[in-house]
Image 1 (cartoon, helix red, strand yellow):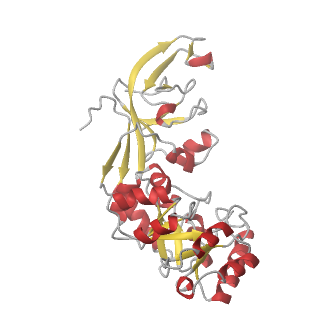
Image 2: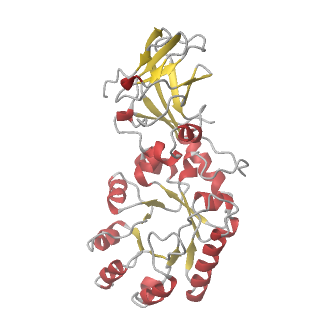
Image 3: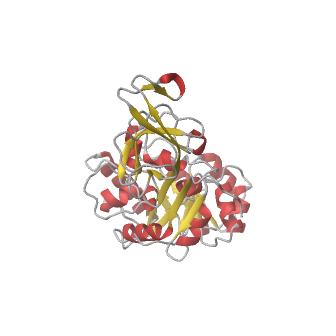
Length: 362
């Protein structure tokens, strides 16, 4: 076991993970809800997350082949959907070998497939209904279908991706649903539309397969205040206080003297920084949670440390645990103070932060 003197860690609550999955899947009981574990399960550890969910989910999804191979090597046996599809022709051979489902979204991928008529794993065809990132137009998709063998067309899933599903009143989502449904019905294909926000905000988007990403990890994919279910945060990022010092009025803390004491102040130094994934652009005032109290960030984030103003707090001492986000402080609130989004904070926690996996009911 590695020796760890620093107490900075990301606690991953697998019970919360499994509960979130079941609660969200229950919103779409007639759909198969795929767990999206790309980007190392949004920073939570793809192998451990996959093992934890293995008995609950029909399949997993990752961004590209490399991520899927890691899971197979770790013993994950469920089907894995490759969201970006084959990025090299040899990916078809690997997909056949490992039971990967490939998503096709450009003509080159379809031309590669012609050389692999023996590839009969489940295929997904992506239609661009307005995201304008990946996928065929509905017209060009008709031509692509003619390149598939009869066996490859069996079980074909037609899918698309919402651009604004987090906005419950955005009519573009209705247009995207109508566009994909119209196409799929003509060709008697299965459908996949709903991401996390789609599952929660747009029940009419629930289809054969849903793709559950961010909400699986207990963070809100939509700004709506009234969620139909309660989500439990899966990751709690924490560290400890390693120094406390008193500052007189006018004294500064950190690089660039960007924060100066406007009153006699008490500053605590916490062992976490941008090398751990706590963003350097975090502004003074960004909250942390300590001893059931909130304290604001003071000064710039350093590579290995941050400093917080604990002047108004009581009972704070060396070694106290500081929560950067998680069970007591939502990652959404922290992201707002950093002018970023919850997705980025979770996925940017660096490899030098140990993950501690627990099964604790929330």
